Image (cartoon, rainbow, N blue to C red; front, side, top):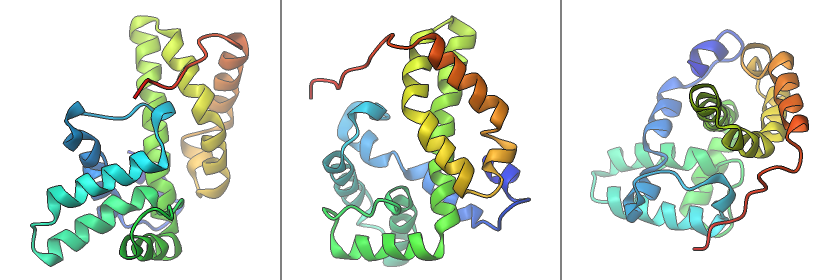
Length: 184
């Protein structure tokens, strides 16, 4: 839906973004936990370990298929381009950041917007204020950045009205449910 909403503002490689969305958690699932790492627990070394698990999982593919998936997987890290990643991966991330900068931002927007939508669903369906407070606390500033840098995101998705509501929700719950990193 995000890609469809943004296409009126910017030309996108939808295939790259959708492939990335479909495989970006493979490294997390391959470690046996079956899903996402909590946002507060994400680290550069954790990202690198996920990358290594991704490679182990897909490296037996033919080179054409592996390259396409490798590129799509690295889209999520392209803006950061962590120094701990191998040279080949860093070159791919650099190319993505330069030549597919909008796709890099769209992936990040989808990831962050999905965090907020899940938290909103929990708040709406279950009255869970805690998850919404904790999610908004970490996502408002990055979403504001994306609204400034990604054409259409602030017009179609992270609108001024939504930001204002989210900001006020946080103000109303200031100091509540301060999260802590998990014990690894």
